[in-house]
Image 1 (cartoon, rainbow, N blue to C red):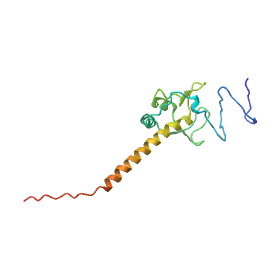
Image 2 (tube, rainbow, N blue to C red; image 1 turned 135 degrees about the vertical axis):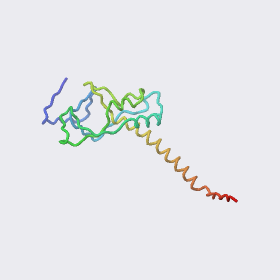
Image 3 (tube, one colour; image 1 turned 90 degrees about the vertical axis):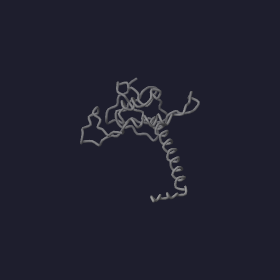
Length: 155
């Protein structure tokens, strides 16, 4: 079944709505909440993400601003968007992390930005650990008694 709605039509659905396939939205999609199934009971072979892998992946990519050419945006006429280039993320992420960049039905690469949260979390935890270790080292160095070097006289 296919439902087509014109640009000025509003469709309101009450209760629970379930979509079993892909939902493509050609404009802004607003929701009060977006949740993803994440219960431990539906996962197997759970492993920690190596923070070094996550940091290397993010270090290889740059956040970009851009204009979308596929939907008729014109440079200097619309606000710039911010995001990543899917091909750069795909190249930077290890092969075993395959659900961040996906191929859409239209043949274009898509980025699941919600899945980047886990990668950012891992990097943030690693950086916090590094900050705490460096702070402890600096504190220890500052508390060491200062030694004065004696000058040797040349007689």
